[in-house]
Each structure stands twice: as C-alpha cells, then as structure tokens.
Amino acid sequence: MATRTRNHAEVDLAHLIHPLTDHSRLPEAGPLVIVRGEGCELIAEDGSRLIDGSAGLWTVNLGHGRQDLIEAATRQMSTLPYAATFGGVSSPPPIELAERIADLAPDGLSGVFFVSGGSEANETAIKLARRHWVRQGLPQKAIVIAHDRGYHGLAGVTTTATRLAPYRGDFGVEAPAVDEVPAPYTYRCAAGVPCDPEACPVCTGQTLEERIVKLGADRVAAVIVEPVFGSGGVVVPPPGYLRRLREICDRQGVLLIVDEVITGFGRLGCWFGIEADGIVPDLLTFAKGVSSGYVPLGGVIVSDELWDELRDADQDPGYLMHGFTHSGHPVACAVALANIDAIEREGMMERVREASAVLGALVEPLKDLPEVGEVRQAGLMVGVELVADRASRARFPTELGRGRAAANYARDHGLLTRGLLDDILCLAPPFTISSEQMERAVSILAESIIETGDQG
Picture 1 (spheres, one colour):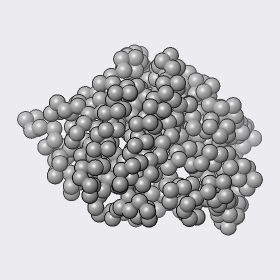
Picture 2 (tube, helix red, strand yellow; picture 1 turned 30 degrees about the horizontal axis):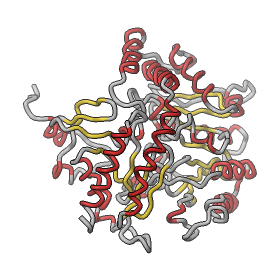
Picture 3 (cartoon, rainbow, N blue to C red; picture 1 turned 90 degrees about the vertical axis):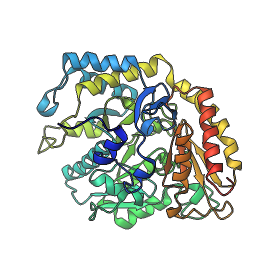
Picture 4 (tube, rainbow, N blue to C red; picture 1 turned 180 degrees about the horizontal axis):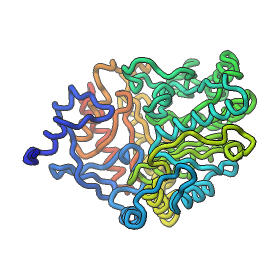
C-alpha cells in the first residue's frame, strides 16, 4: 500500500505531469501546491497567501469559495449526477442552460452544443463549419484561417489553429487545412510600425480578404478569431475589427467563428465580446467563465441558419455524428445556471466595468518603467509587454525567460500571474476583486519587473 508520509510537492514531482510546464526546471523551485481558495486569494500548503491575478486561467470569474455554486453542484449530484445527451436523451439542467444562453446571446444565435472546455468547443465549431459546407455539396471548403496571435486550444485541429509556435510544440505532423493571417497587433504590426489602424491593411481586414482570395474562397470554410487575443498577449484589436471580418466573410461566402472562451460571460463587462461591434457570428464558442471554473464546461452557440440546417429533415445524413461523454453534464450545467444567476443578481457587468476603470488607472504608471514597451487593457484583462529596448521594441532573447523570472518573483511575493510567451505579463483577476487587492497586485507586478530587470 502506498505511503502518504511524503509531502504533496514530492509526490507531485514523482507522478504528476503538468500542462505547459518545463519538467526539467520544476524541481528547482518545486511545484506550488494550493490547498484552499478564498474569494480572490489562494492559500498554499505552506500557509502563504497569493492574489489570484489570473483567475485561475481566466476562469474563476466569481472568485473562490462561492457557496451558491457549491450548493448547486451538491443538489444536482444528489438528484442526478450524470445523464448523457446522446441519441435524444436529456435532463433539465442542460435544457434550461441552453435556453438561458440563447437568451443572453445576440439575436440570431439560438442552438447550443455543450462540451467540457474551450479546446473541445473550438474543435466542435471547426467540425460544424466544415460539416456545413459538406452538406452544401462543397466539401472542398475546408480551410480554417486563424490569426498568428490566436490561441484556440490544444486538441487536434485546435492545436494547429493555435498559431503561437510555443504552444504547438514538437508533436510532429499537424492537422491539414489550417492557414493564418497576422493579428491586428498594432504594437508589432506586420504591416509596419507605427500603425494607423484606420489605414493599415492588417487592421482593416484587407490582408485577411486578400488571403481568402489567394487561397480561393471556394476552399475556405471559416475564419476563427478572438475578440481579445488573450494567450497571445492580451492583444486588443482596434474597434470595428470584428465588424470588418463579418463583412469580409459575408462577401466571400465564408463562415465566421468567434472564440469567446476567455471573453464570454463578463470579462469585458458584457456577456459576449461581440457586443462591442454588434455582430452575429456563425458560431460562437465559450467555456471558462460560464461556470467560473467550478466544474469543467464549455460549448458552441450556432446561428439560426446552422441550427435550422441541423434540424432539416431533407438533409442526409440527419445524424450529427459528434459528441463527448460529458456533453451537457447535468452537474456542470446546474453550476453554470447558478453562476449566471449570481452574475445577474450581483450586477457583475457593472462591477466589471467599474473595476476595469480602477485597474486601468493603476497600471497606467507601469508604462514609465524602462523595460515596459506597452500596457494593453480590455475589461479585466491586462497585458504588460516587456522589451529589451523601448525605441526599437526589441524582444528579450527567449532563453533569458524574462517574463518567467518576473512572474516567479511575483509568485514569491504574493501574486499569482503568468508570463505569456515570456515577454508579456498578464492580469485577469476575478470580478470580485477589491480596489485594495488590485492596488496590491499591481504594486507586486511593478516590483517584480523592477527587481528582476537590469534596473533591479
């Protein structure tokens, strides 16, 4: 019988394979073992407390220890812990949640397919987009165009649709029929800097449309985009970018997939990021904040047209041969319903907007630090890009691990954050964070940049 006398860190190093982790380096600092969460704070096994500066992974929107969400899970587990949704079987929680989400989404989006997380959601959206064209007699329309700062998951096709090279790793052959265009990243615009978003071919969508034409619109199934490129560095597109993409996709006969896995359910101060540009995509994916991460859940909302197509008796085959064991899991859906109730009851959208203004004022002085090239913000999402030289915008050598060093320092001083692609530090706290906690988080972040840099 295995002994339990070793501490968790030792057992972790012996047996637990961590995602997105350099296991050769892990023993140096040892894993951080979290044993409890309280509001916006995490308590480690050694008793230290940290501000959850990333809300887990852009996920724990309502904070830790919410009894209403815990009780929703407990009630559902005691009534019906599991029911599949295959073959027309269902249960009340996924039915009620599908209706609720359809009501929250803009008009024109009405069908909801549930999965367990963001990777599955985007994988599903891509399959549904390609299936649409197959059923239209156009199977050659299979290419999905992603952005070079886009992150859409690490499953099959989504690993290839994630165009950030470090995330694609060394897994050999990639999925076919995925292409890319530059993201509207004004600080490092592919069309040159300084960037004028009103005239820039990347930011106006001209580059994307030219790429569709070059590939052949008769071969392109869909374009996939995030309202804010989160894992790509909190890259915030210029206003109107999604609207331009919608117009281009309509003109070229291509579907538009909007990945709201991070931005959906309030992180930008609205239910969905598409609301800012007033568009309706063909498919919208969500996860993370729908349940505040208390139970894994995600999904795809499809347009009325695609939903009608799925129900068209004249289409052959009628079966949707796609699904997952936990699609529409009743416990996850019950927690999501309680989560949405709390967001509405506690006025979280207004709270996010107010907190975003406070956070924006707090991070503004970071722009004056010698190694900070740009500070970007959208709602409760902040990206602080570190540079070796501000004038040339030169990056630090990857092997230096500049962002990782700052994130590690912050962790040791009470803030859990992430160094995205090494050069970019992010803040994306729970919606419930107080002004005092935000002030403390930004202070630690500033100190981490200073103390681990040349000026430290």
